[in-house]
Length: 326
Image 1: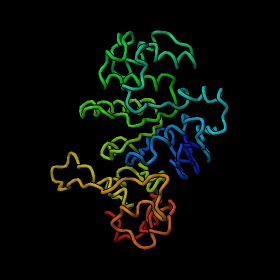
Image 2 (image 1 turned 120 degrees about the vertical axis):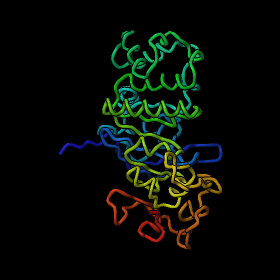
Image 3 (image 1 turned 30 degrees about the vertical axis):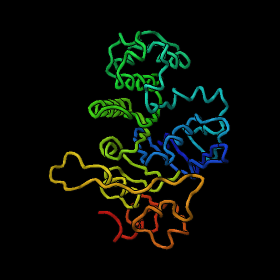
Image 4 (image 1 turned 90 degrees about the horizontal axis):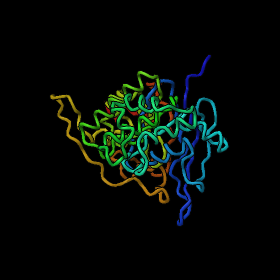
């Protein structure tokens, strides 16, 4: 049987080194992304989402400790030598970085920046660069522009063109609509979705905004304090969250397009815990409105929900129907 899994992450730990000691940013994460699938990764700032994204291609500081396994098309990224990594980055997996206005080289023309990755892996012609620009809805004349001559949305399109330039299997989109106005956000989201479908790509779509995941992902994983606390089909999870944190995230955003909805967005008090000062037991229990005594001492691992083969939840109430959202 052919394995269609493009990305398989197992027991991933990522620990930064700081002047205050080790900082555990990602703690025991398991993830799978199938060929052609889009997995949404959601959570507040500080939950470890971007660290996870950078770790997938070892784009973290050299002093960072990483353990576990990251299988990209069957190859373990964590055991690759630098030369192997250069061949994998952009060609097999690429990243649309958060905040394109801070990523592009301000003194280099747009075309030259797109061309750099293509030259490394395939060699290039000017027509290839211009084809990439056309693919993301930009005029080929933009190849001669500098980043300051483009709007925020156009810069983000350039980042997407760069990510697609070597025809990778997987695109990691890390908060690709950050700092963009609502109309431009919608255009970028639609562009990513169209390209993914046309090319049969797999995608890891990272965001703190669950409202964008209902239309752009197949499955959603919710992250808190460096761990995955719930995974499931996108629509099912967003409409019926089981973990109290997933539920709180879903309730923090309005339901758009339903005139009959009386849903009022709610806030979530407090902040994610300091990675160096994690509470005992479930790390969410200090903010949880359904926490019980055992939550303060037992750290529940991610496990299957009894009545759904596609759902996994890390909560003592996972199979308690009276506490699950319907």
